[in-house]
Every structure is written in C-alpha cells, then in structure tokens.
Length: 270
Image (cartoon, rainbow, N blue to C red; front, side):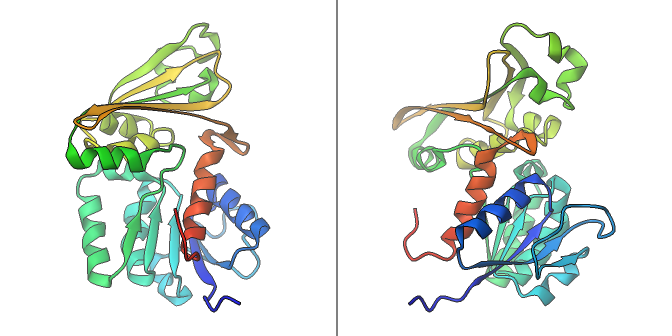
C-alpha cells in the first residue's frame, strides 16, 4: 500500500480547461483532491466546483488552503495576479496561460519568488508535443523554428483575423497571421499560448516564427513545428480534436494538465 499523501490542488480559473481536467482526475481515481478554486468574482454564475472545494477570490486566500500544487488556466492576466502568492503557498505552480510571458518582466519575477520560497514553475506543453526534443536540440544550437497552427476558419472567430477576413467565406487554406511568437501570443492570447511554449523551449519569443492558418479542409486543431540546427532537423505534427466546451482549445490541453498533475503523485514519470 502506498504511503504517499493525497495531493492538494487549487485551480485558478474554472473555465473549460480546468473543469475538464478536474472531471478526468475524478474519473481516474488518482490520489488528488481539488481543495480550492480561485476566481475573480465568486458571485458570478458558473458550473459547480468539486465537492469540498473552497471558492476564493484573493491570492491572499491561497495560503489558508495549504495546496501542494496550484494550476492556473484563467487567462494571461491571472498569472501576474495569482502567481507570486501561489509560489509562496504551494511547492509547484503550473502556468497554462503562457501568453502572459510576452511581458518580459513577469517570468523573472516569478522565478525570483520561486527561488525565495523553494517552489518551482511548470510550463505545460498543452496542445503540442515534442517539446523535450526541441529543448534538447537547443542545448547544442537551433538555427530556425517555425510553429504553424492550422484550424478551421470559424475556430478563429473572436480573434483579430475577423478584421481582415470573412472567415465563413474562406474557401482555400489562408495564412491569417505571420510573425513572431511574441506578436502571435499578444494578438491571439486565447489561441497562441502554445507558440510561447515552443519559444521558451527553443529560440525565444522574438526569434520563433509563427504562422496561423485558417483551412476550410481542417477538421482538427493542428500544430506543425519545424526546427533545424546543429543536431539536425525535426518536424512535429499534431492533429488535436477541439475541446467540446471550447473549440478554441484542444482536448490535449486539458489532458496534458491531467498528466502533469498526476506526475506529482507518481514514483516513475515520463
């Protein structure tokens, strides 16, 4: 019988991603308890939180929940708001809204807080994979990294793409944005978090090239990452089903959070 204690988790944000992760964790029966949910407004109508979880509205409330792990998936503003307190209260913080790191001062601030409290920051791979290979190649030298995101046209609804394209009328594969990871994540914060993950593992936010593509033939949310350097060339392609409750995100984003959370309870990890 395992003597490991149950993992106490606080979710920051109770949107589609954290709700899906919590649902899967409960279904899988792992030694994980959602003990709290941090939100901006406790009075706002939302789906019920897990039984026994406290709803808190201030980062100052985190310490009282004695979490082992804080999982942020509430949007880029929440990272700066909740991050320092999370690193003081818990030994680990998972940051899903990586577009927040377009603010160059934020990550060093969080690292300083983590060093001060003996905690750490985990950056989830989210909707993409192969980040370990990309980071490994960067040990020697990377020369070029391109991250393409390909989605059905209507998946770009509610983004700046609507200013330049009539998405419902696109009949051919169309590049709706081309630029750096910083520009992509700044202009498409709900869509392009994954490009920041790629940049953090590789060439950085200003040297990683990004193309956002609307493709009428697409039935999935796809990521194509092409990198070359001193160790050779790699090409990674992922075709993800969208999250049922939020088509702007991929199911794999929630699944990756589940995997990272469960890793904290396991003896052997990969």
